[in-house]
Image (cartoon, helix red, strand yellow):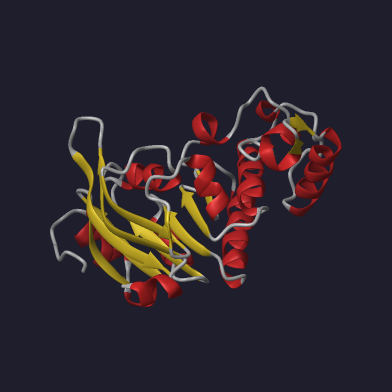
Length: 257
């Protein structure tokens, strides 16, 4: 559908991703997200959500199918090329994927973006410091000390570092996986506000969360993922925890087109 590509920030066709036991963790998924739209994925954990996000972020190979961002084929692109194409990623495990805890706040704020802060391969410390000062202020990272190791910050403020890095750059599509896991209420409200602001700014967001309330509160459309397939896609206004629960547990099935 070339016309769909022109209106979609991201389009995924017949995506297959293998899991750890040579099974299809993602089993032929097709979806698209328009600019200024949040597609939320609801599902019991372990139904392929992790593998889907990792494959879209370039951290896990795509077995077959297509992924396009702004109409450009990025199916075989590596992490760096995807970032250049406009993909940002809030990983579900900030300690394993999102931060290097012994690095400073300032260094974590440019993690994976070093080439944007370097000239002829040499990092520009002044620009890294300027970036840190701006991001700490905009994203209310506390304590506001760029030189502190990330491990010295609370879980909510560690998550704000990841949010600031991934959402404080130019991007087209944000892959937001469990964006408020293990953070306090104040940080949850802040992160939700950032996601809504990005949507208002025309960004496309794929939201994966184990919290059904979060999916319903933020999404424009909700997709249910069950055993590697999207079994239902509906406008969030028509969804309820009860109706989604039936699809999430497989007691009600209907494969989405």
